[in-house]
Image (cartoon, rainbow, N blue to C red; front, side, top):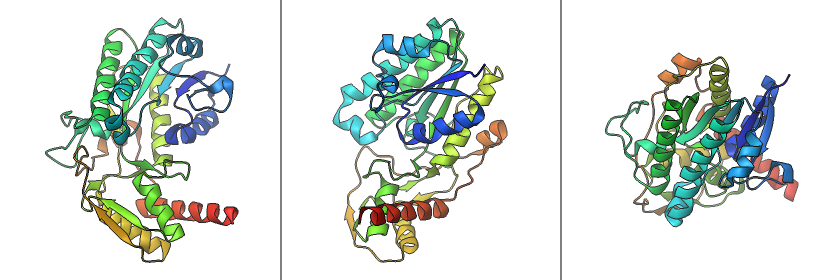
Length: 303
């Protein structure tokens, strides 16, 4: 009998890439997203009863649903903390009360580290959140830790600047730069020397599937894992790459960095490689080039 996984946030960037990979692996994916087109897939993680009903008979719960951007957390801290913390607690309750006792996989973020004193960051880097979104993710991780003490099989995965789809939020940095390169528009740099570790959504989805495989084999002591490339890239370097791959010079508009943003981050991927045999396969150059091509195709279709 095909096993069922509940996937919250199934319409998001990562959820949209993950669902078909889980299906290809042999799972039935029960989608759950506040923005879903189909009524049967629509659900809010703040609705406990809806979550309890959706989790019924599931072997596992993958919790991606969240207020997922730093800037959104700063604009509406109450909604961010409520969704990301209370929503996670609802997912945990649904798992603990289900007769099937499903495992729980929580999506967290490299934002939990804040500004690391030493780079590359490992999963043991102290958690020093700098903004509302990061604090909500630290609280969610702690709630999952309590669930493990209560007997749940759990896993935490931390994502780092995931990109790779034209359906992503238009003002996120990689899609914004790729779209500008495809269309010849201006690029805005909020902190040109800010440095990040960009990971392609296909690599991230593949990593999550590997974690699911461990949980399905009964793993109950898995440490937190982050999916990172290990390669630092400045925003200025990303802009130059987009212009090179797009084959045109663009107007670059400089703006001051936001005070609540981490200025420099890149991570060490060795734990993911050791535990999951995972390493990033899509380089930033290849991923950005694909994305520019996808935006060009959209432009041709619209013309």
